[in-house]
Image (cartoon, rainbow, N blue to C red; front, side, top):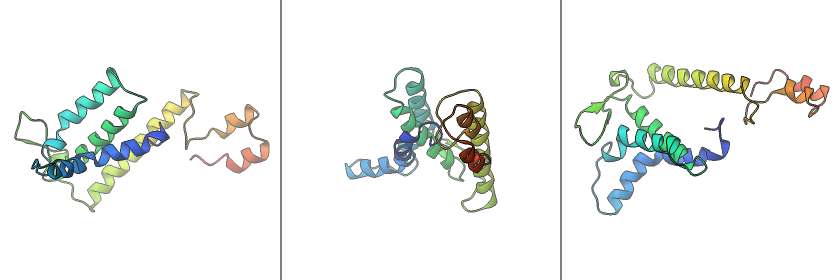
Length: 161
């Protein structure tokens, strides 16, 4: 989210922590919610994200919140305990058969793969659009458009971020 809409990062972080703090809010209101149950439904977070993308969203706020929540739930699906797919099933959903453990090499491989894939996707989007993308600067284009001088271009031409 930081690369696409930097201003939505706080909303995405709020969504990424939402499955856990929603449990605490429910418990504080007197409704007993067990960990990784109702607030961790893959189907609910996916439906909220789809609704915000295809039907209605206010300045991408709902999509940012839902993408954060869905990423939290999918990361929890990498663990041994997994997450429920929805209210209709008592079975747990696992990615990679729930074999990844916190702090081991598998966790770092998955995180590294996501970072590389995201970087590649952003590079491809940047190559085909003229939209402003924070953190990705096109120093050559800035020089050709007269926004910077030759000295600044020489200082920054090999900086990719």
